[in-house]
Image (tube, rainbow, N blue to C red; front, top):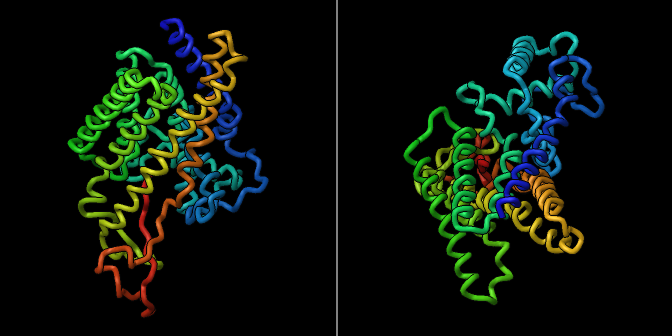
Length: 357
């Protein structure tokens, strides 16, 4: 068992490093300024996104860029150079000399994935969304391969610790309610460890349930993830709610019912759907491939590769299924949002709110 974990750790590091090395051409292109290919690249603008966010394909392509782990290799100097390029564009309305639209889109991506939009500070690398895949490969591997009680507890603890770091780094505001953050962290750790151990003991006690054994980590992760999201965003669904705007962008106030819809959609996409790929699909695939993977080191590396592919492929899909901006019928909200009219005197029937990640 100890040998298996050593192979798993080494394989996880090797898998993540292989993905990071793919960034070298992109890094040279970014720091070199001009020279990026401009094929099929839209005209650069700061007024809208590179991809159409009203379509699933557009959201998916944008999300793939947002979680690109190669951006973790950007130096602070490269990020500052990207910031200067964007500041020059904002001041003059023109691209800096020698830069193409592709270069400018790359500079914008570098800034958006590396700099907090409110504080303007550089984000902690380990907590960026671009670190989600390289961080979750070893975490998922540990949770799937854990067999003893200490291993199960350690794996769940590490996973929820990373989650709280990710939530803090990607917070929407300049400050954070540490009390709520630490409470959600404690709740998630307790829930994940309790479910993982409780379900494991239940399966051992009831032989007919042993077929469900490989899915215990998934049940623990989705339960803890749902609790984490719900508790962290409690103010949205059980307090002030979220800001709601009309089709003209006019702020109509705060809606708790809109906040409830946003939290529910986030739980379904991120906490329930996303873990299926890295924690269920590799288990099924490994059972199919078991007759062909009789050498343990080869089997472990194969499982790590499956986890990496599943996380890389399904994270953007899970976050792109539902639009970031929710469109809601006013009839589903509080009475205060009904019978409103826009600036032209037309009835407001649809309103919009940010779903969150």
